[in-house]
Amino acid sequence: MESIVDVVALVAISVLGAALARRLGFVAPLVVLVAGLGLSFVPGMPEAHLDPDLVLIGILPPLLYTAALETSVPAFRRALRPILLLAVGLVLFTAFAVGIVLHVLLPQFPFAACVALGAIIAPPDAVSATAIAKRIGLPRRVVTILEGESLLNDASALVLVRVATAALAGASVGFWPIAGQVVLKAGGGIVLGLAAAWIAAKLHRKIEDSLLDDAVSLLTPFVVVIVAEELKTSSVVAVVIAGLYLGHRMPYLLSPTSRLQMEAVWRMITFLLEGIVFLLVGLQLRTVGSDIETSVGTTVGVTVAVIGTLLVTRFVWLYPATYLPRLLPRIRGREERPPITVPTVIGWAGMRGVVTLAAAQTLPKPNPDPKNFVPDYPINLFVFIAFAVIVVTLLLQGTTLSWLAVRLGVRQDNTTADALAEAGVQHQASRAALEALEANADGAPTSVVDRLRALVESRSNNAWERLGSQQQETPSAAYGRLRREMIGAERRVFKIARNEGRIPEEVLTRAQRDLDLEESLLQRSDE
Image (cartoon, rainbow, N blue to C red; front, side):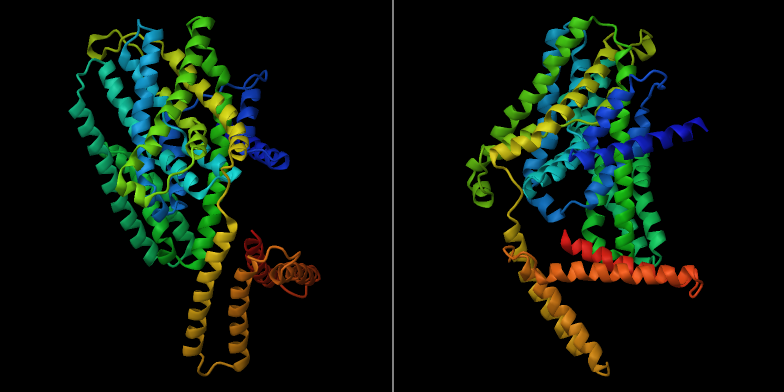
């Protein structure tokens, strides 16, 4: 019973934190994190213990999966080169840079342990990066690069962690074994992800019940992770590949009802998991800080040095990685040269999250037993450093990223260009719809045909109206405002009739569903 109460309390606190953040205009994950930090010092508050398996198998897969579902595959493919430079190259560069700094400051401890911590804190978090980048309104390509980096960098980081911990235990590790392991795990993850996506797509095509579609979608990331762990391949890559494939094919696999319902289900799950994740990170402060054995001076000095190394190495890598490849004619002709402000904003968007803390807690504990020997190193200090990196990057970079983007002029893409493109495509779609109407209108009442023709014309006009933003209220906006008032009046009449016993509950439910669907469409058109 206590565990159920704890879960309910976590959900309630994270929901209240998100509500407060929206009211104050802040980013919800940051408010929830601060709430967790404060609650960790409340007398009587039970200590929070973050189970790494819960994070890596229970929380991370659905968050990665839903982020991949929403990622544009064409945009991801166009940005694949910078994504891989960040997700693989920057992770390796950061891990060894941190490892060298740590080993210089703590030369008595093994270099492999220092590199392992570097790999753990190298990758920005999928949850924090996408949540904050989308919230503050960065250019679409920047968001795609940050999303792609955060989706793939955990795979390269976790492989490097395993290699470093193996070296820590005395296993001989060379370049080619490492490269072979990376290729094997990543390749296995790609194959498994595609196979799982193909099976899930087959199931979605055959399913006609929206609830079953939701169930299959919810099970997919967990099944993929469990199978990947059994096959000793990259579960992160497998989940991401499955999500990218299914997200790209979703318009052809699901009915409209299933798509609407599945979107609502995943939005709710993501909202709750994100809140719980950041709350758990904050609640770890007392637990993590109480186990450190090194002196306060050493702890503070090493932590500051590591965080400084993280911030510097990201910029040191980003500027050459952005501009040097464009010296090649093939890349220069395909990609525009971005202003220096763009890599600067990307460099400042390196927030870490709960995966970093969970991975730190999987580090092997020192063990003098010759059969399972692990040399002595300050594991509690390393866990604390990982925790400090999360808190500092989230609170420092997460709260100032929007300000920096505005100051540097890195803003959201031109909405006028988007509206113009939408209007052009909508015009083509309207012509196709009218042609389909004329081809199938034989025998239909004239009033029905006229009504459908007017609906198509109205939809096409609405798209063009978005270009005329100088008007105080466009016809479509007036239509939405008046129709919402009408829907409210209709809804009240049905409720009164139900209360007076003139219609049964089933009639009210059916009418309410139709009115709710129409009103939700009006809200979407306003966004």
